[in-house]
Length: 110
Figure 1 (tube, rainbow, N blue to C red):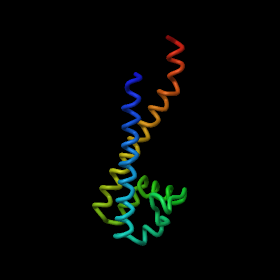
Figure 2 (figure 1 turned 90 degrees about the vertical axis):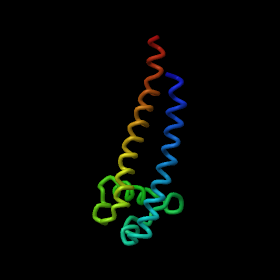
Figure 3 (figure 1 turned 45 degrees about the vertical axis):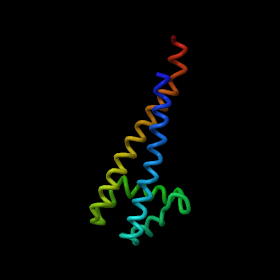
């Protein structure tokens, strides 16, 4: 079981990098093709304008599929992929957290 943790940790780190790239592409598309929606979301960014407000606006945009109202197939594909990616990442993260938190109990039982 111990050999799985470096692989899982590495996978999660790569997924974080992919998430950042995915958000950057979504933000650029919104800024370029739908500036009114981008402004409504608070002009989110990865570093400069990254606050709880813009973070929740981004998750709301992706999670509630607000992109469908924009009639932009490319943006919709990216956003739908981002939603699936976020759910998969969250499941892996919490699964690993659960395993790590239960490790001392398993070790004590042996």
